[in-house]
Image (cartoon, rainbow, N blue to C red; front, side):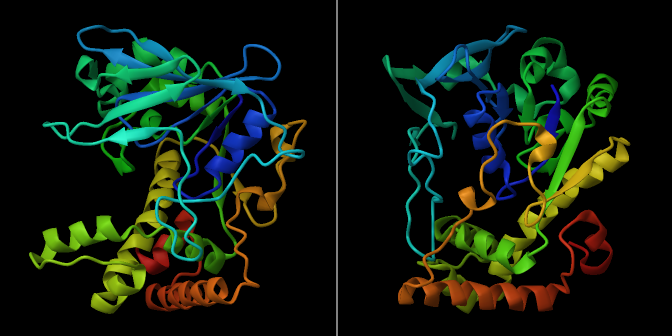
Length: 329
């Protein structure tokens, strides 16, 4: 393991994940899931594989499943990426993902139908434990080696005791020792308004409708971020607070464990420090909205105005941990 990239949601993680993919270097990309982590492997040239690692109940070992296999793509000769989110206010691009989620489990657990070249593989979550919701001391003996046996880890928050982006557990001396011997990267955006626009564009009306109902007891169904803003501005401000708090909490934990790290300015720094043959343009995974389109430009301006108001209201001058002294986020 040479690098750990400590980017939160919408902080360049997918860009680096794609960069390592096109260089065919093994890496893991961690999400907020507690049942598994995903490893990207390249067993032979031009072959891309994605493996999910689960822990069977009552067994202190991991099982892995080949979820996806295809040829490796060339980002410079074919379309390999389309910026999109589950909800997209500015230009209504939809999320295009090969994973199909099926809800309805009586205990609230998610069952996932994975599609790959050999057909459909049903992963029955009833047979596995959500091992990553527990303290690292409980799983490091059987999971850590598989987790770090790669060139780079992207967003491995479980290593520092975070669960679903919240600080929950202490980590272990072994993990701290490993991280201190690794190059740790913490990203940030110098162009704060541009960063906030991307995050506002990800606003999920159904999720925030449920939160509002739970908090107030009043029935509501937000159709857009503007509906939420007009009902209660703090709904929108809290949405942005979450992103900033998550990234700062990561940095704070690294400091507490005295784990050294370097910053990566997503606006100006290049990726040469990763010593890769293929370097993707910085705009590769940026929204790149078509602002020549009048309707898209109008919607973009709406989010820009919200971002500017948020910066004023919160007195936000810096998204890194040092800014917490001023804005208390």
